[in-house]
Length: 232
Image (cartoon, rainbow, N blue to C red; front, side, top):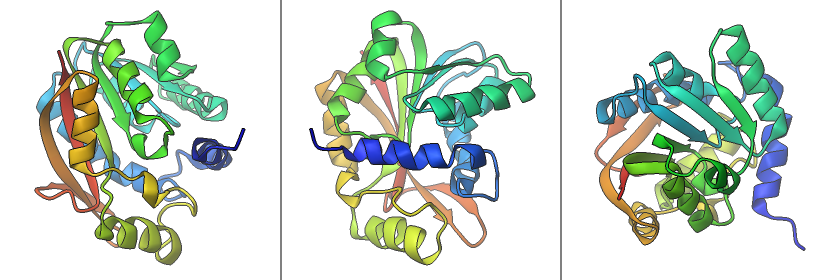
């Protein structure tokens, strides 16, 4: 069986595990985007006392922020190395977050209909089967629960700035992080979500200045974007 792009991504992220919480290290862009992503979530849902699943949680950057906002958080990732890093850092911060090395499908089999919120940040561009991912997210959510997704648009801008500039010129993300062919246009993502039963709620562009290291929401999803969907 040929090796998947998903396997390559996991090897890359495993190699970065020990540097995940270095805010000036190879994952600095995730740290810089995190406050804006959290603000977007807080505008859409009440996180205090919410039950939240963070799918593809990595080393736990967003999981910890959501937990600090008062949510009960379960973070899953297929990388055992990243789950260990996430557990270790949460312990240092005295945060009660349940981390598991698991796929979304396996978690959905055990905890269907349990969650108020499911987070799927910077993940859909790394998976081989987007429908399997989104179907698992749908199964995890309660009726009218909210799915949040952030990803990259498949556009000329995202190729020039999200791949060539980010990985080769400015080196603000590790080389090999992105496969442009797996980027997804907002219209395509919306269609995929509708196909598994979601209703679109909102979509915003997510712009990032690598020189000032500041991120903000914008009207147009030229490169990165963040969106929300409701389970039926």
